Length: 140
Image (cartoon, rainbow, N blue to C red; front, side, top):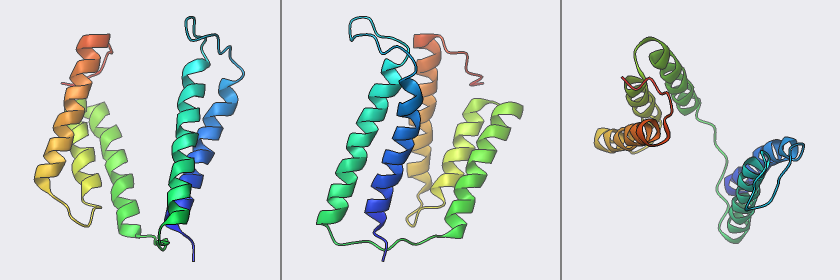
């Protein structure tokens, strides 16, 4: 039986390695004068550490079976497609709401209130990125 926690950790480590290796082609620099490769490399190292912790936890706890729920995979895929289409044709605030609502329906304990709170936080992050850092986000 495949332990889902060990597979989650291994997948996270694999994705981190995929991003860490190309970042080594760029100069890392120092912490006082960082190069273009320092940020992706440091984030990748943190993800590798988190993946390792997930694997250790998976080894120490009772194994959880790996199950595939095609409905949930479909809902998350549709939510991402909805985000892309709504961002292109409506605006990003609507896209955030569509994505969160659709992806939240994949949960066993779906709550509209929880989905609304998550969408609100993501919208606030979008406004903060736009106002604070000058990102050009088509929020409305």
